[in-house]
Structures are given as C-alpha cells and as structure tokens.
Image (cartoon, rainbow, N blue to C red; front, side, top):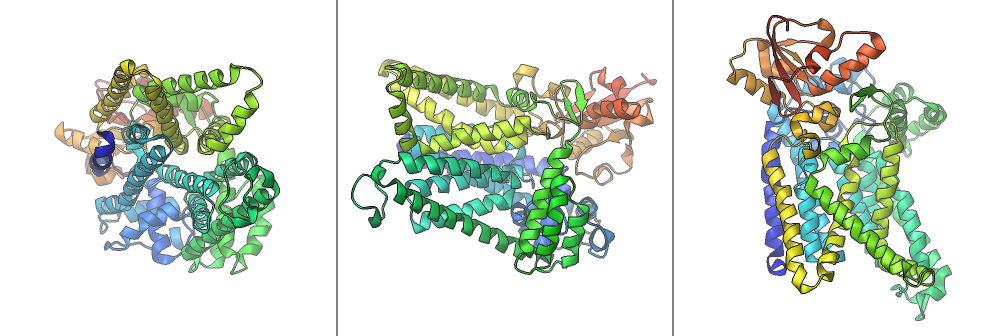
Length: 600
C-alpha cells in the first residue's frame, strides 16, 4: 500500500505543512533578524549593492528580495543608512518595513514565501534520499519527522539563514555522495554547484568540508566496485589506489573550483554597482579581532582588483562571523544570565524543545544502532572488526558522512560561544531524521512477522502523537516546549531569545488588546515588529528601569529574563517583581501580559 500511494502521501504531507505554515506566516509579525535581512535582500537585487548586512552571504536574502521587485515600495536611499552609515541595516529595516507608503504585510508575505517553498523542497529531498538509501518506509518516516517537528514549523517561513543553510547543506551532501558513488561530469558539476550554494547561504557551511575530505580519502581506500573510467582497467579497484587517488583528487578539486567560481559570480551580481569605497569602509569598520587585523590589508588589496573584488566582500563577511562568535551574546539559561556560553545549552535546549515522540524515536534508533554495532564487532573479536570497518565504509559512506557531520557540528555548537537558540542546530536535523528512520525501518524488518505489526503500530502511534502535538501547538510553534518542562507556557522560565521570543507575537498582542478593550498598556517588546504600527496610541513604550505602577504590562520574555543581566552588570532595576508572579495572559508563549493593581 505504501509503495502504491507513496507519491500521494508525500504530496499530502507537504500540502499540510504548506497550509499550516502559510497560516502561521500570515499571523506572525516581523521577527528580529528579518529587520536586517529583508531590506538587504531588496537592495541587493534592486541596486546590486552589498553595503547592508554583509555578515551573511547573499543567496537567501536574494531569494527573499526577488518577489519584492514586483511590489510598489519605497526604499529611501537618500537617508543616511545608505549614504553615510557603514552597514546601516537596522535603520534600513525599520524605515523600509514601516514607511507609511509601504504595505508592511505585503512585504513580509512575499519575502517569506520563497523560504517556505525552500522548506518544502528540503522535505521532499529528505524523503527522496532516505527512500533511495533505506526504502519507502524510511523515506516516509524521515519526511514525517521533519514535516511535523514544531521547531521546523516555527522557523520554516522566516527570512533568516537557519532553514536555508539546513536545506543547502543537505543538498550539498546529497550531491557530494552522488559524486563519490557515481563520478561523472554531471555529478562533479552538481557537487560543485551545491557546495557553492551552501557557502552562499551561510558561512557555517565550511564545516561540511572536513567531512567531505575525510569521506573522500576513506572511500578511495575502501571502495570495492569499479569506477566507470576505462583507464583504471578491468581489475579490482583496490589494486589501483594510486589511480583512484589521482582521479578523486583531481575531480574533487574541479568541484571546488566550480564552487569558488559560483561564489564569485553570485557575489559579483550583488556588488557590481557598489562603490569600492564602501567595501573599504566595511572592512575598516565592521571587522574586529585578531583575524580581522591580519585580513584587512589583504581585503583592501582585493577590493581594488575588479576580478578579486567579489571575494573581498565574501571575506569581509567571513571575518565578521569570526568576530561575532568570539564576542558571544547575552544568554538566559535556567535562571542564569551571562554573555558567555553554557556547555549544556544545546543538549538541554534540544531535550526540552524537541517533541517527545521524536526524542523516543531517536532513543530507539540510537539503541538499535549501538546494539547492532556491538553484535557485529564483538562476535569473534577482534578478528572481524577490520573487515567490518572496510565493509561499512564501502557500503555506507552516506551514513558515515551524516554521522561525522552530526558529531562535528554538535561539538562546534556545544563548545562555541554563541547560545542564541535551537535554530542553530537545524543543519543536523535532516541527517538525524534520516538515520533514525533507517534504524527504525531496519528493526521493523528484522522482527518476526508476529511482532512486526505491533512494532509498526507503535511507530505509527508515535508519529500520530507528533502530528497531534503540531496540531495543538498551532500557530505558536516558535515558542513550543515539550512536556518535560510543562509545555510552552513554561518555556520562557528556562531559555529565551529565538527559542521562545523573536517578536513573532506582536500582531497577536494587538488583537488581544483590542478584544479586551484595553485603553493603555505598557509594552517592552523584543522583535522586528513596530509597536506603534500595530498598537497605535494604546501602547506606552516601557523598560525595566522605569519602575512599576498600576496598569497593564506586556513584556517580551527575552526582556523579562535578560533584564537580570543589566541588574547584575549595571545595577539597573530589573523585572524581578514581575518574574515572581504568574502572567495574566501569555500571548503565543513569547509576550507575557500582567495586570498590576495598586502598584502590587
């Protein structure tokens, strides 16, 4: 039945995801990062100038900016954010999104739509690769785990780099493995193109190259079947390791050259009308740290060369990222606030934000994989280990690459200095879902016929649970937390920022205020929405240091908890008097409403 109706099932799942994501997208206000990314994308496509938001590559912003070219919008390039400022991205965003003559909702809708469509393409590719590797059941399960993951649903429509880098890195891995297994002009070119697109989506994609290099070297030595090139002769490939090494080395270099040329072409399309003086200004003002000191002279020379100029802009962004990571960010984590990182941050955030059904399937898959690995290698130990390793690397290079990338990316995330949110783990989620589906499908097929129906019944119940969680969480996916911490209403007590509150619920706050006939409300809002645009004169802009008094308060979860940092570092009053009480209302999990009577 699955084989017969698999295409309809895939189309149905993706159609449901599109429908619920479309509804969520319409209800969400601009989130913080969109204030910088949306005007940047518009300006890249319209003016071929990269002076805004140089910290991130252009691809995803270009995708968001293309539909905006067909709208009647005003982009005030006569203002100082464009004429004199270096990287005036935030001022550009506030002016572009909320100019009276611009339709804010149209801008948000059309810039977000390409990202949503990209998320659907990623879902299809997850299904396709899992099906190619492990069969239809694994493909459908991997797609379901991705499609109904509340964290994906919470971010799959925003103009940010998080979903986009997950998609393009996944595509790059898919075509790299295709190239390894069936090297040809087509697969070499596709591998190079998608490596370039991943680099053009986000700089963290550089983490794929160590994995590619290791997988390439191992596959050279452990591939058993013949390569489709006559100069290798008709004997077994293992007799021709020198030729294999030469072939794979040269073809991989060719793919890397294609990827570098593509980066240069795309950057050139985005900067060819940009005055070189602006590139010099960005290099002098936007980069900091030891790496920046060493890189500046090189970047300045490259900026003066028309051929190398696109790569100078690329390097500015890359160096900015190194500085950003070194600088850290203010993080609230389980009652503590610091501008340094917590080693437990990402494991704990994954544990409390990932739906429990997914966690149980991950646990089942990990136990199955570990059991099988021990069973294969402990029997006749240690005689069979080397043969098992050779067979595994020959027949399972895709799995090895996925596991290696998950391990490397998790290590870098845990030991890094940026604790911004679960979204930074997105690049490993597609690989986790595929590997989980592989182990579940294998276990299901290994059981006797008597037990298979019970096993698959349990798996279907877990998937149904996952779907039910997604249905009941609608549309408040970004602030979703699982039952381990009491659900979404308690998430802000443990972590903040994009785990809970990115400003997405401002429109819902305005609706709540109107429905409850509130004349005035003090608002301390974190996000990309404009309070005056949605609440008008009903809102009084407020901050923690302004004290307390009777009336209504709407406080973003991030500011509620992060105000503790200002108290610790600057001695300013914080929101302790509000943290000690339960909110009157919780808007989407991210904005907490309090009613204070007689100053109490």
